[in-house]
Every structure is written in structure tokens, then in C-alpha cells.
Length: 275
Image 1 (cartoon, rainbow, N blue to C red):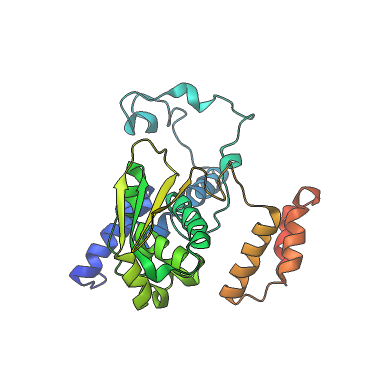
Image 2 (cartoon, rainbow, N blue to C red):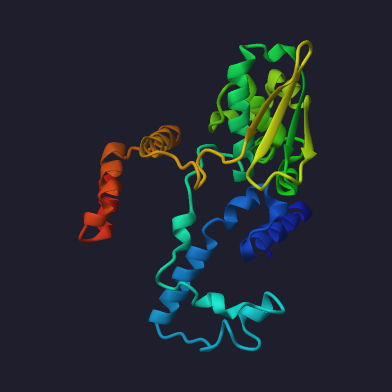
């Protein structure tokens, strides 16, 4: 009806697939972004419908043909109420320091340490081996064709961390992705499975043209529950995001309001602090 081309129809199907739950196949594409926040949006939509009189089966989740059984043969229904009101999944969320997939953060951290030990001998690197879990390789052992590939690429994360000493938004931009020196260093990276390493860890080895290898292992990435960002790091991330986005928000007022969120009589007041 919209007169889409065959390619656009294919893209529409792929985007629809991401909206259903989010799928790994869409990681290096724009469709990855449309799955973010869908659970919250759909939950709000459901609450608004309920407030306007819409009804649902009282056993929509646990019923014999409810959602729990639609998603698996043997659902663990006890987990529906286990720790209800006492444990909160949101408390396990952390702030990412780098705009790349979370499994690549340990790779970046290890490379930052190696860069300090290299003493500017990046041109002496013969090859780089990154060892990690099956999840790390499945997510990031891929060729880089564009900036979206770069965000989920072991090779690009290594190149930026070692060559530029940074892994921010600019380092995953198209301009950086196609820099000749970055492309050259990416080609020297090999990813190898190491089943002894847990998800979220990485072992990086640099082989120099002369001299012994340099090794670094990062077991817990910066920004993880084991090594969370400090308040000043979170504030710096917000300031940088505001700068890159060109917002007219008064960032210091926003920061102050967020830190004092628990003292607000009405949370909607936070929205008035952006100007």
C-alpha cells in the first residue's frame, strides 16, 4: 500500500522482528535501536488501556495457554513472585562508559592498559590476539563495513583503544571507522575462543615485531557491578552527551535535580529543569 521497494519491504520485516523482542541478528543495523524501550512503552500503553476500561484474562501470564507457556515448555512460575517487592532488577543495571556492546568493554579496558605499556610503539605491532568467551566472539568477531558494525566489533574496539586511547562516540563514527590507520590495525586483530573466561572478560595479547608479547586480562569491565562508574564519571557522560547532541538544557541544573530526586514532592518537576 505504501509502494515500498523490495529492499524497503525487507527492511520493514526486519524492523518488525526487532520490535517483537529485539534480536541479535539486527545488532549491526538501525533496527537494533527500535527495540530499545519497547517493554516500557508497551507497559505504559497497557496501563493506559486498562485505565480506560480494557480488560484481559486474569491468567494471561500463567494460564495453560498464557504468555509463560507460549515462551517455553516448562515455565518457572515461582519466579513471578520470588522476591517481589524486595529485589529489583533495575538495581543490577549499570552505566556504560563506552558506546559499544557491553561484552566489548573488557576488551577496551585491557587495551587501554596495553597502550600505556606500549610507550607509543603502535607501529611495532605485528598482531593482536583477543581471547574471550563464546558470547564475545559471537557478538563481535565480524568485519566492519560501517559505524554500526564498529559498535559491535572486537577489532574496531581494539584499534581505537590502542591507537587513539579513547572509545567515545567520535571513535565509533563513520569518520573514524574509515581512517586508514584504524583499518590497518583492525586487520591485525584475531579473536580466539577461551572457554575458561567468563562472559564480560577478555584477555588481550599484543605481539610485537621484535621483543616479547604484552598481555593484559580484564575480568571485570569498568562500568560493571564489580567496578561501577563513579558519580563524577556519570556526570561527565551526561555533559558529553549534551555537548554532542547540541542541547540547550541547563545541564548543571539537571544533574543537581537528579541527585536530589528523592527529595522531590512531584517527580514531574524534574522535566522543568532542562531550561
